Image (cartoon, rainbow, N blue to C red; front, side, top):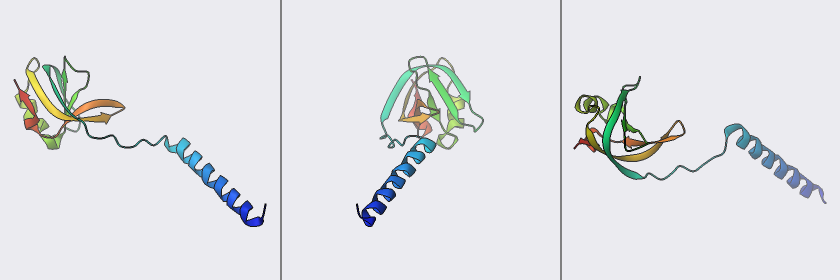
Amino acid sequence: MQKEEKVVVVLLLMALGSLAVASWGLGDFEPAPEKVAIVAEGTVGSIQTTAGDHLIIRLHSSEMPIFVSQDSGAELLAGRIAKGDRVRAKGEIAWYGGRREIAVQRAADVEVL
């Protein structure tokens, strides 16, 4: 093996080692999932306001909570919806804390039936 070939092999091994350390240190990289639209309908089991003034609505019929951000009209919805109401929510599947949730883009996407 000539000197140039040895240098290329060493550089290749260094690059692979760097990638291995980055993968171990930062975790596995996953591509961003496509946005998936979803509609959930059911009876409100609980309504919770978070410390950031966001709203989390849980339906009896769905394991995924409905998340309404402050910017999307959480305060407006909090005054309009009560536990026991039947609602329909349109949103996108999002991930928070390793769990799926339905992220609503605007208050009008949650309607009381």
